[in-house]
Length: 155
Length: 222
Image (cartoon, rainbow over all chains, first blue to last red; front, side, top):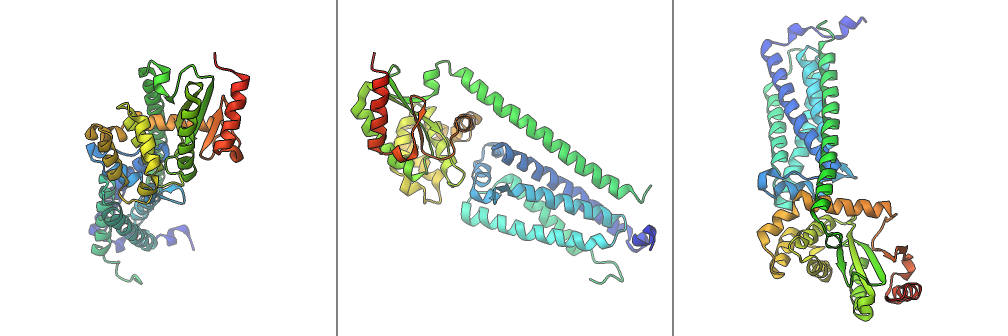
């Protein structure tokens, strides 16, 4: 099999789909920036001030902000970078990465639900940076639902 | 070229994230160091910068690296108060923050004590935090409890809450932790008497008394 054959024909994807994946990549970038900023704060021992609100201090300084000593935000960096990469590849016609994109987004969605639960019912505080990230993940999940698999796809 | 474009985009974004993150990390570290430096410079009197209880010229200095959520530190706090009373102006006690990661609320408690310190009530908050340790340690709303303690001590509560989040307070806790680490502190309480580390088995009233007496013999009161 040649390298050219591995890359499935781009013709399958319509312009609309390409646009949606490009949009998904752009919003993943926004999430990547947010998660990178929060990771740096966690590594330097700072907590964001959220413009005078105490929410970030309480959320980012809590035990739920780390898993086995690793900042939760760093998993966000990994998730958003993966989502961005898979969206780019899918947008360029690499159909096999679409499944990975979908899987990544749903994993992030599940994690986001857990983090929202912790903020709402355990800590009773919300961090704006975390809410921004949650909004991006919801948007990505919406895009996954709105973008049907191409014709002939197994899923 | 188009075949390689997605790889190039992903690679570029990966490198930019890594590079940007590293630059931001360095900038934040510099800012924290500068805040710690400025904080020190602003406090002209070194004695004022330290949390000291007792006579400045006391022949024995007991330094404690403590964590407000650590139960043995709470026990030690009571013993130290008795020792301070017994030795009077021959003993001075210095407290350094060393909140351990294993204690969920220790860092916030350290911030609360330091915020109270900015209103010249560090020791009052120190004593109250240890006295109430069993209550707030298990609490879900520790911040609310610290706020109530600040009110009890007659502090300006709004300022106290702001100070708890301030870079100055965080830098102070971080710098004291750094100091402890540089002196080999790994657990709490860690106590030094005239710069000599007190072994863990001696961290009790009798053991501390013996070491203070020994220090007094070596360096009697002027």
